[in-house]
Image 1: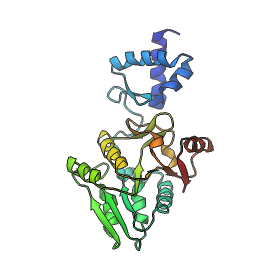
Image 2: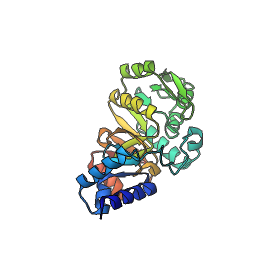
Image 3: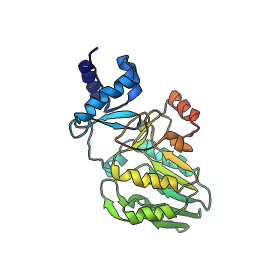
Length: 258
């Protein structure tokens, strides 16, 4: 197969999947990892693709993504709502009295805030409007808010001052959401402005708990922010396959099914 034919095949594969691990492309084409790397450098120079950790994505400025590119938390909350509710309830079962928590933004993490026991003494830091609205109503929950500019599509506040507050904070547990989870390509989110906040949260927590419904697993989104091995626990629903659950377990991640 000529280089030009390989490049056309790579673009066709990415049009179907949006993002793929480099090794998957190499296996499909029957060539070496380095050959694919060299081919991708050509596509990067042509501004057709973007390289991310361990893989490649179509450039969304050239190829429209096969879904609504304007993510809306309100809209997302109605998708797989039953799964997200189960995940949120199961995540809450990991919380102990007097825990100091960080709860990330997202439609699944909102259910964690909703299910927090009203009688349990807790301290919760958040930077999401939907989360802090729930924690502020609980008489035994001390709410800490990291504010800033509101990103309306995610109901998330973000600012240098908010990041500084999170850096000073120390949590026993952080519940972190994701839009994509891939054993090969790591944990990803939709928006570039989320990435730094999630990284700072992970650095401020003794235990890092990834929360996502099973539709996010084996999925890739544009913004890489962590390797799977950086998490202690994955809380998801019973839609996860046994094969993928075993992969996570081999990485040292405790898989908890809601």
